[in-house]
Amino acid sequence: MSRSVIRSSLAVLAVAIAAGTAVAPVIAAPGAGPAGHHHRGPMMERDGLWVPGLGPLSKTQVEALKLDAKQQALFDQARDASREAMQARRDAGRGQHELLDAQLKAGKLDPRALAAEGDKRRQQFEGQQTQLRDKWLAVWDSLNDGQRAQVTQIVKERQAKMQERHAKRGEHRPGRAAQSGAEAQPATAAQPAAKAQ
Image (cartoon, rainbow, N blue to C red; front, side):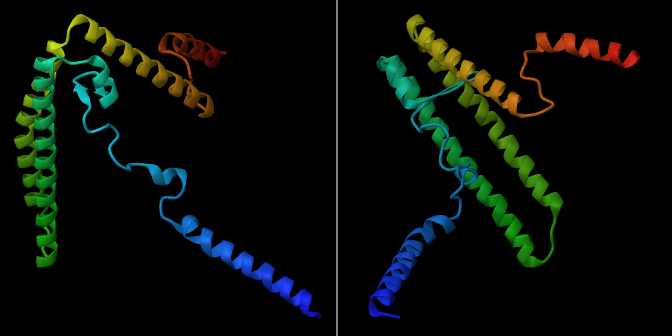
């Protein structure tokens, strides 16, 4: 072989190796596929509003409401209380894991103690959850008619998007109708008649 053929072959090989080493970490990274993006970070911006029964509003949606000073104070109280409650739940969860770790190290598992600890935590946070809901409802009660109309529009748009996603999903899943309940009833009524024949 001539030198030029060897040089060009080595150059091509070097480029292939360089490209492979540059791309390999990205390909081998955990969570690189579409399923790897699940549960990454909060679903809602941290400074959003939670309307019990309706769900979250993002920070930008809250800014669009143009809260007055009284409303902003209620919002800040509810948000701060929610953050404190979340931190308390995290700390309690760590306590549950520490209890399990201690039992594992001792070599003796006691599911009754773990269940009792879980019940105790649940009772502790039940009252706190009611207080949080009442704080968020106080924010809702402080909104004027125009702001409530804005929230209503946001929820309508969200609901329409959700129904559209469900309809698309129904098209791709055999056995699941992408129809509303009223349209699905005549089809189910026709099935017994077909079976009788």
